[in-house]
Image 1 (cartoon, one colour):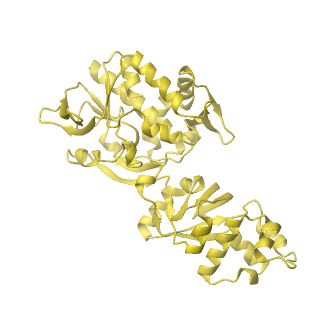
Image 2 (cartoon, helix red, strand yellow):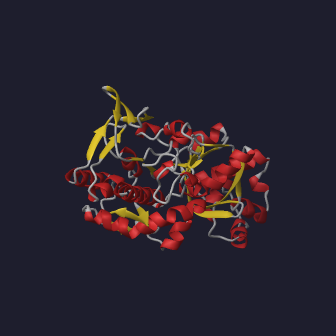
Image 3 (cartoon, one colour):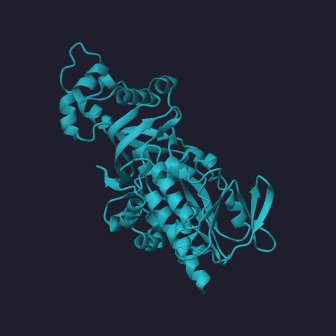
Length: 391
């Protein structure tokens, strides 16, 4: 995005990419449907960035979700709003959009150099790269670093830039997994039977935070959209205390009285599992989760009163004992402090060097917010360089 803004402004631009081709993490983001942005009103949209809202708001206001949709449409990829308010290209994939974008960049004169891994600067202030032909130094009037966080390192964003910038006095908050899963000490029986199965239409809560969505049982723990929405507060609790207790409501659409009334019905000759499945429509994985927790807490589910069972069903406690590895997280928290950059994302300690995207210290939930801020900060950095070069 920075390259597009710069080339449109008359600058000669080369994009140096460590990978053999462009946009590999962009393609990964679109693997299940490219969620470009979100359709909610801008004031609500901006609140999704939490503590970073004030610092990201100007760039997103300058390149809004509406502007992003118009940009996609101009590339021949019109968008639509899904039932959740998320915005997708009609093709639903990332590859047609990326191909059209790269073609337009090529036509505008932007050059790409692949297998060029940035390693820092030399004694003359030139950018240094490790290439298939050995080390190379490049002089430039200005540069944008858009090196990502540390999630999915095999796609290029491995966080190796942290030490290089820290050595030059740039304050970098530790990179941590965001929109990530968590580890749970499931029993062998539970994970053998339910690994990969979703808990659908549940409500998840931690303290005052509550979301509706889905969660997926993994062999090591739990992940999914509902988990990602709470991942920042859960992560900080796990880091601080070594664990966090997540509460899962398996039938959040029923209040305690309605649920207890259904559970008070006669079971007849049904097994307890069949009774739960038929009386309150719990899935096998939901019943399995109830049984997993009951064993851990020494409870006999069938002997609980309808009222106590109803309370448990809508507040199943799951102990999270760790954060899933950053390499598998959707995104990264932490990064360059906003105090280190000016309003155009230029590093104050390194005039002429700008940063964008996940390198900065912000995080957001899934839903289009991650790509929107990456696009917007890239555009802002490009505009900032044009002003820098003009001076």
